Image 1: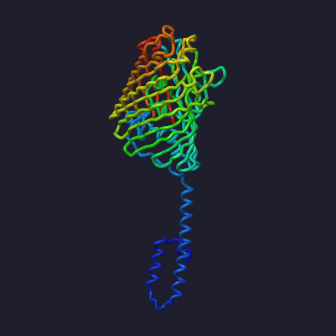
Image 2 (image 1 turned 45 degrees about the vertical axis):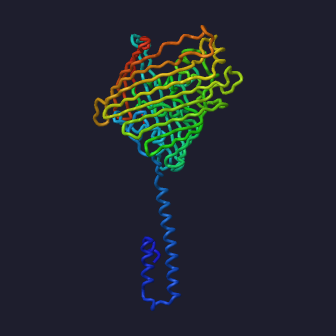
Image 3 (image 1 turned 180 degrees about the horizontal axis):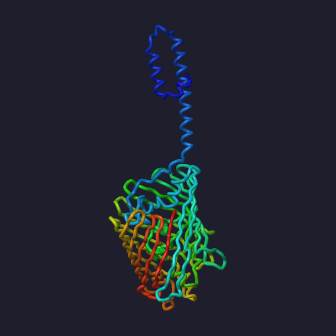
Length: 459
């Protein structure tokens, strides 16, 4: 009887009880009927316990499934979406589907997953063969661990220029190191060292996801990609295709401002970044970002960052100094076309006192820095995993537009805008492996013209 009941569903047992009640009452006394009902009840309880045990064993034998964000429309590479670009057809490039998030969702039964990317390149200045340089630009190994369906950690360890030592130009650093938790299906939170959701490239910067051998100038000189901070962030999504981000993080340190003008002109914010290394945190920063992906092939968005740079340090001439950075971006993808544009602008506040002390080294903090680019790519050919995507990009930027607090006549001259045309192509052996070539022409300084070649991959 016990073996038979074990293989019956609860509904079958209920039916058996009903038949027993409907049998001739003359053959049974009331006490006998009550006894049988109690026996059926006890066996149903045993059966239910056994079924619960089977369900637990099945759930433990299979890896938990990561809750997926609501599907959004195709916009990629470096885009905020969950499907591939009609041009590059690489894997999803939304911040919701960064390598970190995707590796976590694909974790094995142990909850552990690996991911990463690499890029190697060579640049040759036009007319200067002796100036050609080749390097293993970046190698990144990432790992993620999923604690349960809602909580996970992720880390990315990056090595730049192949070799790290006191006498070499290499660097090793954690690019990300954080815990993320899904509060519900449309709201998540993260705490730790993470990339800020600014522009297209900062969060999704694998070489298969952007055009050109090198990352574009605007998103490296004006937006200091890859830009990460220690802090707490929130991300929310809506069924309409709206996604928002907000958080509180560490900022920059004005005390790190270099006396080397070429260094600060390369990127004012990168010259003061702290990268989570004993970061000064007397004055924290806030950020907010908003993106719309509710129409096929369309992305519209922007972000704002504001935070202190003086960090209330008594030995800094402007302890209350701060910086604001804003950017807007748009992308339209239709058929084989991929068109995008981005504009970013930064402004330093309350740096007059600091600049008064910097006059002697002719390197004051700029009042304003800004830039923009427009880019067009076209998938010329595709066969299987192979594809060829030529592109063209125009950039205009200036990292030092005026200086406040510097006596008249002593301020450095404002350099002309940097204007660059980049023309090239990406040849994909596979959506995750790309060969690149491009040529760059600097309209304001032909000595910077160069030919670039590279290879990149991600996994």
